[in-house]
Image 1 (cartoon, rainbow, N blue to C red):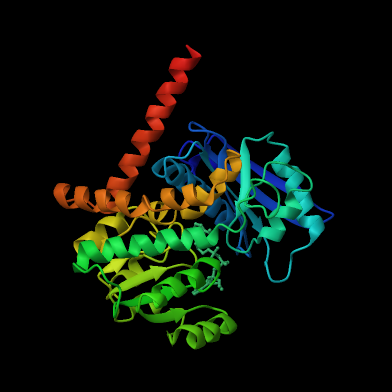
Image 2 (image 1 turned 45 degrees about the vertical axis):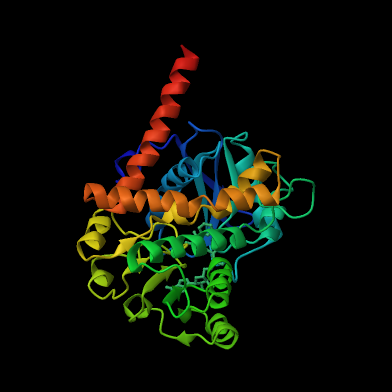
Length: 355
Ligand code: NAD
């Protein structure tokens, strides 16, 4: 039963979209609209089964509520997943059909890019709905969010390294980047520019060879990257990479990367803390992309002001790190509490307005 899903967490709505003609099977999850219309990326992934897809959509959607709240954006939290292989199953018709599903929500959910979905795909959805963002061309179009996500992650890694290792420079700092897609590759560039020493992994060999060549990175197998002897482990692929199987193998002192839902379960936050590993809460460090998208949604796109907002990410992270130290609590629990307080204050405001 959907309502009994551990990840359901009082979602406002979940919509299942099916279009037989194009083969579309999709789920849109809207966790909260307390702060504004729910906005979050669309992920295309060949999930092993519907339950896995559902769980991903729910967890990602709640993460977007927390992310938007912590970034101070006037947006609620939602996310969508299309079940399929982005390298094989894409078609213009499929994305137009998905646009119609988004449109049926009348603006309650606004879709943008996530894993497996490009700007071109979102543009195609935009042919059948105006409730999309992360577009190219046009007056307020914000384009690909991933360079902004990567910029925030880079600044967040610097803040975490400063807090944990006591150094302001990334020169010689060893970073393992897991996932060399949109975010991971931009992140590698910034880290390499600062003289960090990179270890990389991806399930696609072409992405790995590009990074090895471009950044003089060392390649390791995808199932080993979490355990290499480095200072920072930067997950930039899929979620649940911090789990009971990987935990004991992590040698890094800092876990800070762009992937959503890095902790398989909430107790993994405490597990990292007890091992002396500093964790940069994922939805805080990876907020750069949605900050960029938000400027398009609010029709006030200004690149400089987006960059200034992204530059707040390390400030928020440092506040979380210090509070976690003071209170002897996991950084993930401190961030969750801060996000929930912002959401309940907004809900309280809703009730007052309605009264
Ligand atoms: P992407 O699809 O461009 O890249 C993901 C990469 O990870 C791909 O190259 C893929 O081959 C690789 N990968 C998948 N499974 C792997 C594994 N087991 N080991 C190693 N590599 C693996 O996606 P992206 O946009 O770069 O997003 C990466 C992560 O960051 C996702 O978790 C996404 O939700 C999150 N994120 C992205 C943005 C954004 O702006 N794109 C914003 C916030 C969060």
